Structure formats: structure tokens, C-alpha cells
Length: 75
Image 1 (cartoon, one colour):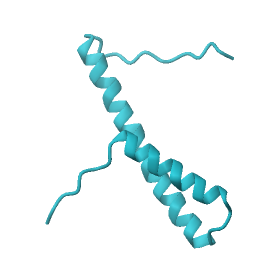
Image 2 (cartoon, one colour; image 1 turned 60 degrees about the horizontal axis):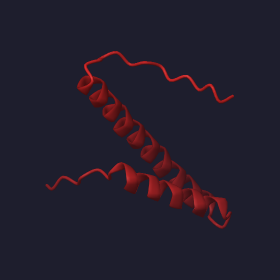
Image 3 (cartoon, rainbow, N blue to C red; image 1 turned 60 degrees about the vertical axis):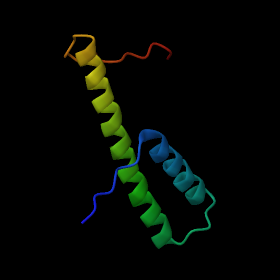
Image 4 (cartoon, rainbow, N blue to C red; image 1 turned 135 degrees about the vertical axis):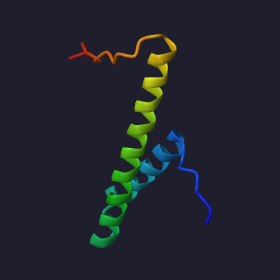
């Protein structure tokens, strides 16, 4: 049984963008839309995990194992 390598962040985001474009056209059946939506949710969770893991690695490398909340002051 062979293991497949999960897609990297860039590939996942590209696929997610393609799924969104297909769904926004409004030409898919309900079943096709649901299938793409389900795939999109999986891709988003995968991307979130990649980014969380990267953030934790950065914190370890800078010697700070505490996560600092991000504050957006642009609003």
C-alpha cells in the first residue's frame, strides 16, 4: 500500500481557488457543488494545519514557545 504525500500549501491554495471559481460560475449540479465544497473544507483544514505547524516552528526557533495573539489595527 503506497502513501500519498499531502499537497503543499501552494498547491492546496491553487486547488482551492479553482474550486471556488468553478462554484461561482453556477454551472454545477447540487451534487457537484457539494463535492467541491467538501473538498474545499478539507483543503482549508489542511492549509490551517500547515500554517499552525509553521508558526509553532518559528516560535521554537526564536525561543518563544508561547503563541502571541495577532491584533489587526487596520480597522
